[in-house]
Figure 1 (spheres, one colour):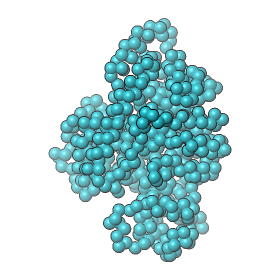
Figure 2 (cartoon, rainbow, N blue to C red):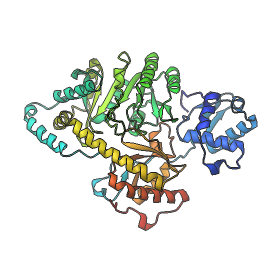
Figure 3 (cartoon, one colour):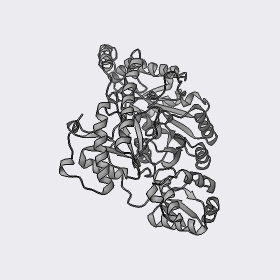
Figure 4 (cartoon, one colour):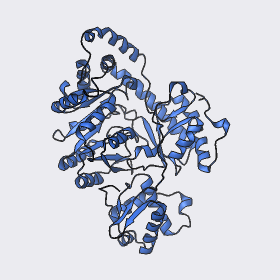
Length: 499
């Protein structure tokens, strides 16, 4: 059990229960205690109640819900029997997940080249390189390369021309930035790992959104950090639960808060400036570093051009300890492996000094290509990539309700994926079945710090729009078999993609 956990008050749990809509057959002619247990179970599996949250005492909850204490006690006992509640006499009851819950698969790893075209890859959310701009930028970078080839080629802070381009882009987005505030890294994950390695020690608490980016959660676990998940609010639209964030920052005093405010991975949520300011104020009061992951900040395919985007978090509270990680991989091409960290110059120098023991620098040619793409071609490149994402999002919005009417998802304003609730179907079970049917699926429990979100999957918007109808038909067939416990026939396994 976690060493720090949220205490859920009776009014707070009552508000959450009011939003926990069970399927109609699950509520018809059922005793009140079973409905209450089902609602709490749903809140836990959807990540809206963190694993390890302390629930109200039976008498207090009965009063808040205007139920008998016997009803609440029986519901708690049902949850204990199912593995969703742990209790200790005199200490209270905490939410849990059953032992033996299905582990997440490896669907976030790219499909090997020899399997592409045969497997429907719904695991990796990454765009192909935009052409012709990438080829043109590469040709220009090759022309410039001799200027750098006379030296050793090691640039621990990055090639100056790329640091200047990244700093210029931050300034254009409303955050004045100098090149000495930029550290170029080998991919955004390289930047995230470096910041975590330098600033987070084994046993330090890190507050994270629930859900959050799966690879970062795993990287934090590897460093020995203790994750403190903070659930999202989902009504009327996904957004930070600031009351819970304030409670966590005040009570857990985490060393760091890791957030994705711009077109969040996996939900696509865009956080407004008012919420950003409030979270930054709470982090400053708690003495917590804010690590803002802005790798998807340029992907507002659903935001009208006339609507200004929120400024980067570091622009809203200069006195807070805000470190930003960005990437060329989400908008340009992941194959470039270009990321960056924006921080105070002293921290940039410290990170660069630590970096050389495991990574002498990012490939120079890749940096030169990225610098070219972040220059004059950027508006055209961005428009091209957003058009592609928008077309795929519209195609999924049409096909999913037609073929999978029990599934639902919030309509995001941007990002690389849809966060899909599978109507009670296990995402991990879908992923396992998909391995035999030629469909790679990213199960929702990969994106929970504590294994929650079992009834979700992430669907990437990087599938070509013309391929979406056939992809959803295959996904629906797989879901139908998984829902009935049916086995896949030989004719269903690993069929080529018809796109």
